Length: 116
Length: 112
Image 1 (cartoon, chains in turn blue, brown):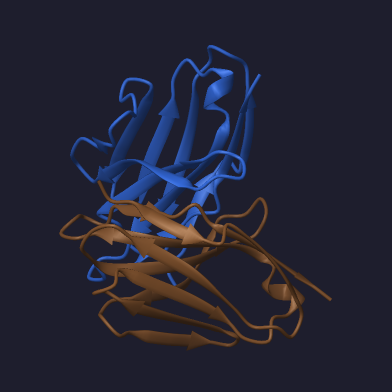
Image 2 (image 1 turned 60 degrees about the vertical axis):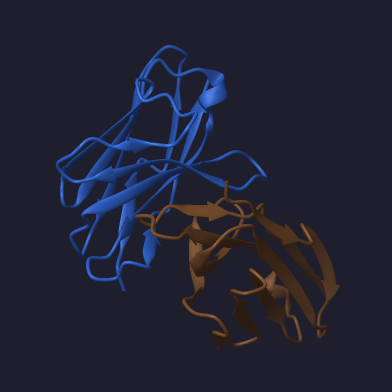
Protein backbone atom coordinates (compact mmCIF):
# COMPACT_ATOMS: atom_id res chain seq x y z
CA UNK A 1 0.00 0.00 0.00
CA UNK A 2 0.88 3.65 -0.22
CA UNK A 3 3.36 4.82 2.41
CA UNK A 4 3.71 8.32 3.82
CA UNK A 5 6.57 9.21 6.12
CA UNK A 6 7.19 12.18 8.37
CA UNK A 7 10.39 13.51 9.83
CA UNK A 8 11.13 14.07 12.59
CA UNK A 9 8.79 11.94 14.65
CA UNK A 10 9.45 14.04 17.74
CA UNK A 11 11.00 17.45 18.18
CA UNK A 12 11.54 19.70 21.15
CA UNK A 13 12.43 23.31 20.50
CA UNK A 14 12.72 26.53 22.43
CA UNK A 15 10.24 29.36 22.19
CA UNK A 16 11.02 31.72 19.34
CA UNK A 17 12.79 29.21 17.14
CA UNK A 18 11.50 27.68 13.90
CA UNK A 19 10.91 24.01 13.21
CA UNK A 20 10.55 22.25 9.87
CA UNK A 21 8.54 19.05 9.49
CA UNK A 22 8.82 16.96 6.34
CA UNK A 23 6.14 14.82 4.80
CA UNK A 24 7.11 12.39 2.06
CA UNK A 25 5.14 10.00 -0.09
CA UNK A 26 7.56 7.09 -0.44
CA UNK A 27 6.14 4.99 -3.25
CA UNK A 28 3.85 7.30 -5.14
CA UNK A 29 3.63 10.86 -6.37
CA UNK A 30 1.19 12.99 -4.45
CA UNK A 31 -0.09 16.10 -6.14
CA UNK A 32 -2.03 17.00 -3.02
CA UNK A 33 -1.00 16.72 0.59
CA UNK A 34 -2.85 17.82 3.70
CA UNK A 35 -1.61 19.04 7.06
CA UNK A 36 -3.55 18.43 10.27
CA UNK A 37 -2.89 19.22 13.89
CA UNK A 38 -4.20 17.35 16.87
CA UNK A 39 -4.16 18.63 20.44
CA UNK A 40 -4.06 16.05 23.23
CA UNK A 41 -7.25 14.05 23.51
CA UNK A 42 -8.86 16.05 20.73
CA UNK A 43 -9.75 15.50 17.12
CA UNK A 44 -7.79 16.35 14.01
CA UNK A 45 -8.15 19.82 12.55
CA UNK A 46 -7.25 20.47 8.93
CA UNK A 47 -4.71 23.26 8.72
CA UNK A 48 -4.01 23.51 5.03
CA UNK A 49 -4.06 21.81 1.68
CA UNK A 50 -0.76 21.69 -0.12
CA UNK A 51 -0.64 21.38 -3.90
CA UNK A 52 2.59 20.74 -5.74
CA UNK A 53 3.90 23.81 -7.48
CA UNK A 54 1.36 26.23 -6.08
CA UNK A 55 0.59 28.07 -2.87
CA UNK A 56 -1.05 26.21 -0.05
CA UNK A 57 -4.67 26.80 0.81
CA UNK A 58 -5.08 27.53 4.50
CA UNK A 59 -8.16 26.88 6.58
CA UNK A 60 -9.86 29.74 8.33
CA UNK A 61 -8.05 30.75 11.48
CA UNK A 62 -4.69 29.27 10.50
CA UNK A 63 -1.93 31.88 10.23
CA UNK A 64 -0.17 31.38 6.93
CA UNK A 65 2.82 33.45 8.03
CA UNK A 66 3.30 31.28 11.06
CA UNK A 67 2.77 27.91 9.42
CA UNK A 68 4.72 27.98 6.18
CA UNK A 69 3.93 25.17 3.78
CA UNK A 70 6.03 24.32 0.77
CA UNK A 71 5.17 21.52 -1.67
CA UNK A 72 8.33 21.63 -3.73
CA UNK A 73 8.05 18.24 -5.41
CA UNK A 74 5.53 15.51 -6.03
CA UNK A 75 6.85 13.53 -3.08
CA UNK A 76 7.67 16.18 -0.49
CA UNK A 77 5.73 18.78 1.45
CA UNK A 78 7.18 20.70 4.37
CA UNK A 79 5.54 22.53 7.23
CA UNK A 80 7.63 25.14 9.01
CA UNK A 81 6.40 26.45 12.33
CA UNK A 82 7.99 29.88 12.63
CA UNK A 83 8.69 31.62 15.92
CA UNK A 84 7.22 28.73 17.82
CA UNK A 85 5.38 29.25 21.09
CA UNK A 86 4.31 26.73 23.72
CA UNK A 87 0.73 26.87 22.42
CA UNK A 88 2.02 25.49 19.11
CA UNK A 89 2.88 22.26 20.89
CA UNK A 90 0.78 19.62 19.20
CA UNK A 91 0.76 16.46 17.12
CA UNK A 92 1.11 17.35 13.45
CA UNK A 93 -0.05 14.79 10.90
CA UNK A 94 0.22 14.96 7.14
CA UNK A 95 -1.66 12.96 4.57
CA UNK A 96 -1.26 12.45 0.86
CA UNK A 97 -3.75 11.62 -1.81
CA UNK A 98 -2.95 8.84 -4.23
CA UNK A 99 -3.26 9.94 -7.87
CA UNK A 100 -6.36 8.56 -9.49
CA UNK A 101 -7.98 7.82 -6.15
CA UNK A 102 -9.78 11.00 -5.33
CA UNK A 103 -11.33 9.57 -2.21
CA UNK A 104 -8.40 8.00 -0.39
CA UNK A 105 -5.86 9.72 1.82
CA UNK A 106 -2.84 8.04 3.35
CA UNK A 107 -1.69 9.40 6.67
CA UNK A 108 1.85 9.84 7.89
CA UNK A 109 2.91 8.67 11.35
CA UNK A 110 2.78 12.17 12.81
CA UNK A 111 5.27 14.55 14.42
CA UNK A 112 5.05 15.42 18.10
CA UNK A 113 6.18 19.04 18.57
CA UNK A 114 6.93 20.33 22.04
CA UNK A 115 7.85 23.98 22.47
CA UNK A 116 9.50 24.87 25.76
CA UNK B 1 -20.58 24.94 8.05
CA UNK B 2 -20.19 21.19 8.11
CA UNK B 3 -20.41 19.62 11.55
CA UNK B 4 -19.61 16.03 12.33
CA UNK B 5 -20.89 14.61 15.59
CA UNK B 6 -19.95 11.28 17.06
CA UNK B 7 -21.52 9.54 19.97
CA UNK B 8 -20.72 8.26 22.37
CA UNK B 9 -17.40 10.01 22.97
CA UNK B 10 -16.37 7.43 25.53
CA UNK B 11 -17.34 3.80 25.51
CA UNK B 12 -16.34 1.18 28.02
CA UNK B 13 -17.48 -2.30 27.18
CA UNK B 14 -16.80 -5.85 28.14
CA UNK B 15 -15.25 -8.40 25.88
CA UNK B 16 -17.80 -10.34 23.92
CA UNK B 17 -20.39 -7.57 23.84
CA UNK B 18 -21.76 -5.70 20.86
CA UNK B 19 -22.05 -1.96 20.45
CA UNK B 20 -22.58 0.76 17.87
CA UNK B 21 -20.86 4.10 17.40
CA UNK B 22 -22.84 6.77 15.59
CA UNK B 23 -21.63 9.53 13.30
CA UNK B 24 -24.01 12.30 12.22
CA UNK B 25 -23.08 15.04 9.80
CA UNK B 26 -24.86 18.24 8.98
CA UNK B 27 -24.64 18.75 5.24
CA UNK B 28 -24.41 16.94 1.95
CA UNK B 29 -21.43 14.69 1.54
CA UNK B 30 -20.68 11.76 -0.68
CA UNK B 31 -17.82 10.23 1.23
CA UNK B 32 -17.47 9.05 4.79
CA UNK B 33 -14.41 7.58 6.42
CA UNK B 34 -13.71 5.64 9.58
CA UNK B 35 -10.27 5.66 11.16
CA UNK B 36 -8.65 4.06 14.17
CA UNK B 37 -6.03 5.79 16.27
CA UNK B 38 -3.93 4.12 18.96
CA UNK B 39 -2.35 6.31 21.69
CA UNK B 40 0.55 8.32 20.35
CA UNK B 41 0.06 6.99 16.83
CA UNK B 42 -1.33 8.30 13.59
CA UNK B 43 -4.50 7.21 11.85
CA UNK B 44 -5.23 3.81 10.41
CA UNK B 45 -7.85 3.73 7.69
CA UNK B 46 -10.67 1.30 8.43
CA UNK B 47 -13.43 2.00 5.92
CA UNK B 48 -14.30 4.34 3.08
CA UNK B 49 -18.02 4.57 2.35
CA UNK B 50 -18.88 6.13 -0.96
CA UNK B 51 -22.60 5.73 -1.52
CA UNK B 52 -25.96 5.55 0.18
CA UNK B 53 -26.54 2.14 1.65
CA UNK B 54 -22.88 1.19 1.55
CA UNK B 55 -21.93 -1.47 4.06
CA UNK B 56 -18.42 -2.72 4.67
CA UNK B 57 -17.13 -5.29 7.12
CA UNK B 58 -13.69 -6.20 8.33
CA UNK B 59 -13.37 -8.68 11.15
CA UNK B 60 -15.47 -7.59 14.10
CA UNK B 61 -16.16 -4.13 12.66
CA UNK B 62 -18.93 -3.22 10.25
CA UNK B 63 -19.64 0.26 8.91
CA UNK B 64 -22.70 1.53 7.09
CA UNK B 65 -23.79 4.79 5.51
CA UNK B 66 -27.22 6.37 5.12
CA UNK B 67 -26.73 9.57 3.16
CA UNK B 68 -30.39 10.54 3.40
CA UNK B 69 -30.26 10.49 7.18
CA UNK B 70 -26.67 11.80 7.11
CA UNK B 71 -25.72 9.00 9.44
CA UNK B 72 -23.01 6.41 9.55
CA UNK B 73 -22.61 3.65 12.08
CA UNK B 74 -19.65 1.57 13.17
CA UNK B 75 -20.84 -1.66 14.71
CA UNK B 76 -18.61 -3.73 16.94
CA UNK B 77 -19.39 -7.40 17.28
CA UNK B 78 -18.11 -9.53 20.15
CA UNK B 79 -15.53 -6.97 21.21
CA UNK B 80 -12.00 -8.00 22.13
CA UNK B 81 -9.36 -6.07 24.03
CA UNK B 82 -7.34 -5.40 20.86
CA UNK B 83 -10.13 -3.17 19.61
CA UNK B 84 -9.41 -0.64 22.37
CA UNK B 85 -8.52 2.60 20.59
CA UNK B 86 -10.05 5.90 19.53
CA UNK B 87 -12.28 5.74 16.47
CA UNK B 88 -12.88 8.77 14.27
CA UNK B 89 -15.35 9.31 11.52
CA UNK B 90 -14.60 11.97 8.91
CA UNK B 91 -16.63 13.49 6.15
CA UNK B 92 -15.44 14.81 2.83
CA UNK B 93 -17.17 18.05 1.99
CA UNK B 94 -19.07 17.58 -1.25
CA UNK B 95 -17.12 18.85 -4.19
CA UNK B 96 -14.04 19.58 -2.11
CA UNK B 97 -10.50 18.57 -2.88
CA UNK B 98 -10.43 16.01 -0.13
CA UNK B 99 -10.80 18.29 2.85
CA UNK B 100 -11.84 16.02 5.69
CA UNK B 101 -13.85 17.20 8.67
CA UNK B 102 -13.39 14.90 11.62
CA UNK B 103 -15.71 14.01 14.43
CA UNK B 104 -14.40 14.32 17.98
CA UNK B 105 -13.65 10.65 18.20
CA UNK B 106 -14.95 7.80 20.33
CA UNK B 107 -12.54 6.39 22.86
CA UNK B 108 -13.28 2.71 23.16
CA UNK B 109 -12.05 0.65 26.07
CA UNK B 110 -12.71 -3.06 26.01
CA UNK B 111 -12.29 -4.75 29.34
CA UNK B 112 -11.87 -8.48 29.99
